Length: 253
Image 1 (cartoon, rainbow, N blue to C red):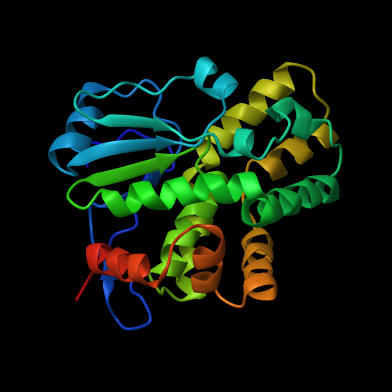
Image 2: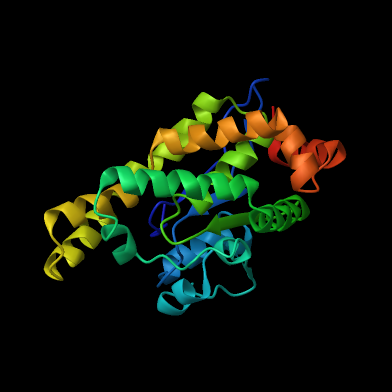
């Protein structure tokens, strides 16, 4: 497959609790779409019928590494962290946290905000509306690394498609193998800039995902709302009718 995108995958083929599968070439997740070669662009359009890109990044991230425009594909910037009024966090900021425990605590806070912050709820309301509206083509959604904002968005979709949590964790953790080469290169860049080994360990932790991050998100949904369906209805303007439409559009026998 001629796809040269870090941390790219199709959610298609994942089974839900009833044995139905997520339709292939409909829901795509990835890291940023920077410097896409012509073959990758052609594959996305011709093989995946890509019609919409949803970019979760902040303005400074986009300015540093803008997505490659793809002809006849709609581009949407949906700045989740901006809607949350989160402060800008660079990779250097993570290195300065100086301990793995500090990074973990920060990331648990991020996942908590992705669920409970009103701005995040507004952002995911828009996200789900875009997903529901794209009935014919494929949508690719991404952030910088495709791990946290994208990872939670993917988990949310799979939860609402009634996929077992075990399968959602599998998709979530694929990021750690898909990102290894890119992460190693980033750590080396910071080593060459003079960061010490303690700082590099903190940075390396921030570049990967952990099952406990997503578990924290799931626990928050259950504790505060009882189920993903109730959370979606109360916080994301995604009622039972929309839920049935989502499953009809994106699941197949």
